[in-house]
Amino acid sequence: MLVIAHRGASGYAPENSLTAIAKAIEMQVDAIEIDLHCIEGELLVIHDRWLHRTTRASGQLRDYSLEALRQIDAGDGHPIPTLWEVLSLIDGQTDLNLELKCENALLPTLKTLDRAVTEQNFTPGQFLISSFNHHLLNESVTIQPKYATGALTASCPIDYATFAQTLGCYAIHLDIDFVNQAFVKDAHQRGLKVFVYTVDEPADIAFLEELGVDGIFSNYPDRALHSVKQSG
Ligand code: G3P
Ligand code: CA
Image (cartoon, rainbow, N blue to C red; front, side, top):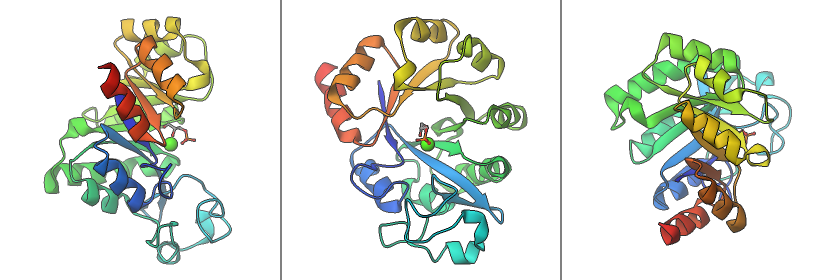
C-alpha cells in the first residue's frame, strides 16, 4: 500500500507549503499530493479559492494579481508556492499527484510536467493528475496520455469504476467513508488502482491494508509508513 502525503506532510506543517513538501520528502513517502489553481497562467499550490483559511489574507485568489498573490505567506514564512518551485524541491525524489482545482489549470500543468521531465530528474510515470472535474481528466488523457489520471469522487456513484475506465483513468481516488470490498474488487478487475483519502487514524490504516487498497492519502504519512512497514 502506497503512502501519499496529503497536501505534503500537512499534519506537521502548513498544507501545500514548501515546508510540508520538504517534510514529506524527509519521511520518504511514496508520493506527495498537492492542489493547483491557475492565476495569470501561473500554477499556484493552494487548496481553496478563498485565502482566509490557509493564509493571513482575505478574499479570493481571483481578486489579486499574480504578483500580489506571490507576496502572501503560505503559513511557513514563504510565499504560496508555484508548481515549478514544488517540482524543483522534489526533483524526482518522490512521485507527485497533482489535483487540478480549476479548469484553466490543465494545459499549464501538462506543459510544466513536460518541462520537469526534460529539465529535472522526473520520469513521466512519476506524475498522476487527478480532479473532481472529470471533463479535465478526459481532456488530459486525450492531449497527453503519457500522464496517468485519477478520478476523484467524494461520494459513491453507481458503476464508478466502469465510468473511470471509460475515461481512461489509471486510478480512482475515493473518500474513506465510501470504500468497501466490493468496490475495491470491481476496480481491480477493471485494472484500476484504488487510492483512499484522507486516512490518519491507525485503525483506518489497518482496515484499508486489509481491504487491499493500493494507496492512502495521509496528513500524517509517518504513521502510515510505520504501519505499512510493520505489516509488510
Ligand atoms: O486527492 C485527495 C483529496 O485531497 C481530495 O480532496 O478536498 O482534500 O482536495 P481535498
Ligand atoms: Ca487535494
